[in-house]
Image (cartoon, rainbow over all chains, first blue to last red; front, top):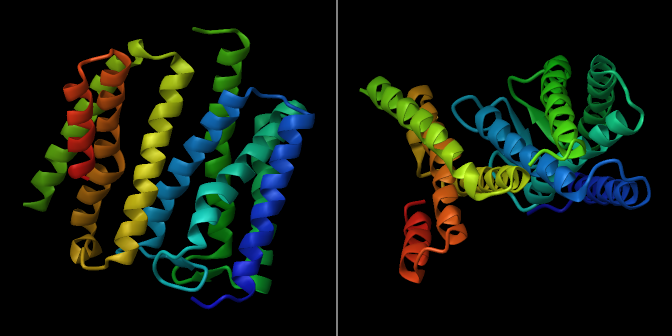
Length: 162
Length: 108
């Protein structure tokens, strides 16, 4: 394994997202632990499913990190960083009582910028048939699902649905 | 041929999903969601990782077999773990619980 800038980027992003989520959950909690955990686990599944469909043969639109196949640093990226990032966005959505369309549009734009930074400066992704503009619509789709799931979960938890 | 297998797989998976809902009575609704997402997520990621490390499963390089593999390994098989957890929850005998648990792992 070549340990270079993209591995360092994964480590830094990992601690940044994990630290932010821990801080938000302990100091400014808006959702219960089980609720947040459900959201994170859902995103672990969603990430793995979409990575499986989009990044493996026969579709194979892009590579993550250095290789065309799985490697060690895929683990923190897919199992922690992506799901926890969604948790942070959903925290903002609930804490600031934003409208769904606002968090979807702004969140997708922010994620697009972050993806461009990681791709341009740290070579975290190698596009094969993918395009940066596709990512915007892809993030909109992912955020729409997450926002609706969060709203549904939060309503049920708050109303004490058994 | 592959098309028929895919169709059967989709019908089977739909049946599995419908039957899996009936297991919700053994859990708190949020607990049921957590367990389901956990099994689906872990299985999918591990299968993805396994497939990446062992490209001998060249079967998945064509669209129809890939769709079949997706339906089986990413949706249907992880859901079967719910039955095993329900057996633990309903306190079935030791042999039944662990028998199904080991069988589930072996068939993956």
